[in-house]
Amino acid sequence: MSDSEFPGENGNDDKNVKSVNAKEAENAKESANANEFLAARFESHRDHLRAVAYRMLGSLSEADDAVQEAWLKLSRVDADRVDNLGGWLTTVVGRVCLDMLRSRRTRGEEPLGPLAEGPGVRMPEPVLSPVSGVDPEQEALLADSVGLALLVVLETLTPAERLAFVLHDLFAVPFEQIAPIVGRTPTASRQLASRARRRVQGGAPAPDPDLARQREVVDAFLAAAREGDFDALVAVLDPDVVSRSEAGVTVGAIAVASGASRFAHLARIARPALVNGAAGVVVVAEGRPVGVLAFTVVHGRIAVIDILNDPERLAGLDVTVLDR
Image (cartoon, rainbow, N blue to C red):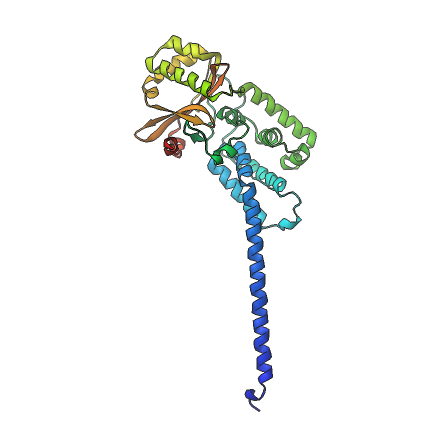
């Protein structure tokens, strides 16, 4: 008997195949929808995670890498079983950043200890904006006045101190959640944050909140530097001003003014800018940045000057944002 004598059997096979294909298509659609939903949930936390990572690492590119790693880790777990996605992601980013900081140490990039006159500091990557103001994305990144001075001090902490301080003091993460990340007890984690807090209070004074007043003081500094007016430079500097760069740390108005008076030729090509949301300048030569200066103005005088002058890292900065 030929196959044509069993039409029903072939018909059932076709129906079964169509049913399987339809089920597979439905499952694929559900999976795609679930992935899109998860991606949307992750994106709602991206700005927060990037802010955490930037404070932990002092580098925008490394912060983006840490956030991407958090997404990869999320995509490999059952997100439906995560009760607090924001908290879970913050913890993951904290772990990733801690590993990255420890990796720096294995490459010989050790914290430099308390800031004092002498050896230089590792300068973080600044966030540049035109004097007209920061954009919405930068506002999220720079919330809570994360000035360059704060990031410079954070560079002097151990990885565990930095994580405990950033997560607890800047993002209100409980020590009970921080403890397993650093492999300490909650009490020991609290002590880590306390040590970091003392270092921050000593090296990153709270700036004057009036941005216009900051700009007046910085403009006066630049004018005095252009003219080589030593007395005017001293007048605008706090007596205990600290000037920090990767080349070294200078303390005291007389010493800093002496160095600034030799800055005259660069001061003439310095462009006003916002550096991490505060008054600063970018020195631009032939369209390329050759220096970034961030100022911390306290009670109408310059208390801290942070200088980035490393050519390799300056090359990665986009100065076209100053023209917006």
